[in-house]
Amino acid sequence: MKNYNHTTYAILGLLTTDCRSGYAIKQMIDRSLNHFWKISYGQIYPTLKLIVDEGLATVSASSEDSKQGKNEYELTPKGKEVLKTWLEEPIEQIPVERNEILLKLFFGSHQSKETTTDQLEEYKAKLENRYAAYTGIEEMLQNNYGEGEDTKYWLFTLDYGKRTTKAAIEWCTVTLEAISKEE
Amino acid sequence: MKNYNHTTYAILGLLTTDCRSGYAIKQMIDRSLNHFWKISYGQIYPTLKLIVDEGLATVSASSEDSKQGKNEYELTPKGKEVLKTWLEEPIEQIPVERNEILLKLFFGSHQSKETTTDQLEEYKAKLENRYAAYTGIEEMLQNNYGEGEDTKYWLFTLDYGKRTTKAAIEWCTVTLEAISKEE
DNA sequence: CGGGACATGTAACGCGTTACATGATTCT
DNA sequence: AGAATCATGTAACGCGTTACATGTCCCG
Image (cartoon, rainbow over all chains, first blue to last red; front, side, top):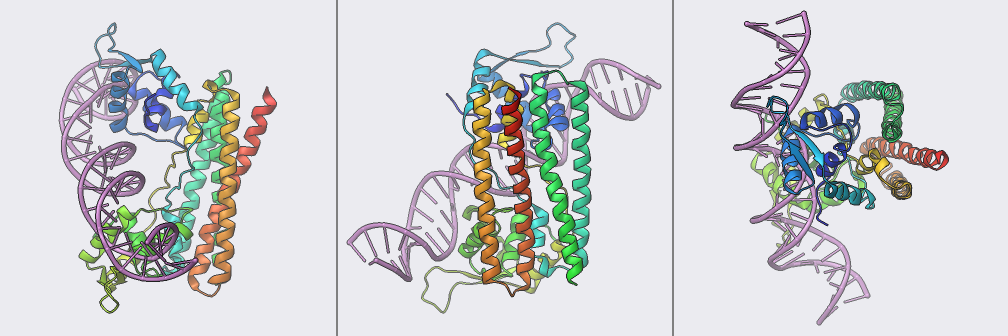
């Protein structure tokens, strides 16, 4: 079976949910997968085209409604099979995330101490916002979709985001303390 | 002042340490920055060329030694200034790391439960290896470089890796428990 | 009737990886 | 002599972002 890139599998997976259009996929990712995935329209539309070309989905060019340029996609059996095959494959390697603040901190001896602490404070504030956003999504999921089988898995991924973000926040706290204390 | 990409700043920063050649830079990153940065030769050599073209470093084409194709780079005052300016700039945004296992888990309702747990177990094992590697680097740093001003900052970045990795390992544990218990 | 959300799409560009190509030095 | 490591470099390719272009629908 042919291999596709992760973006393709992500879209294939989202087509199993209520997302039926490129726009809906973008929204879903921005709202519910944003802690571990992101995507741009510049990828979505060409990839949807590829998916149709490969026979993994069909597109109904909104034949019934007034032609408001709204496309609805539906997975074919082949598309479902490709998705399932990928899901069953073992994971490759864990990625190295490039982190700008750690890169700057690595060269911290060339910074003023004030700059270092400012950057850490700002990073911490951003992480706290992120954490709050995750909590918000979590509550939304628990209220709106409490029934579905999917929800359970979506909450698992959120928990990952919360735990790692919390650990990063704690790191900011102790690092700031260490820097200020040493003086 | 002109802007460069993060790869360029990373190399500029490493040129302030003992790393003087492309090969040494690659080794340093693989050994000591691998928890938050990586780079390939395909980037290093063209970037070093750019850095010289821009007057941020000079290259001594190993004039003295037998011409064994070994280049030594040295930052110019301008290069130091560019680096410092970048270090003082506030950080942009925190990146979204794409995570294959979370993507698969998000679609976990389409997997067999066994596949899900296998993937989580494997991910956990890889995280544990990573954690052990960090501990190893930490010990090496504390033994070999205990004196330098840089070491303190390098240990901060390692601590970040350890804390977030540990949080991810704990997440694996509780998620595996939740999945096995629910049945 | 104007603004915001909905909706689709493309082209240019930047970045990074991979594979390839080459050759010197060092160790056994 | 052969292998491993040191060392530099390029070309092709894949992926993703950004900016641009276009148009509809719905609410007030």
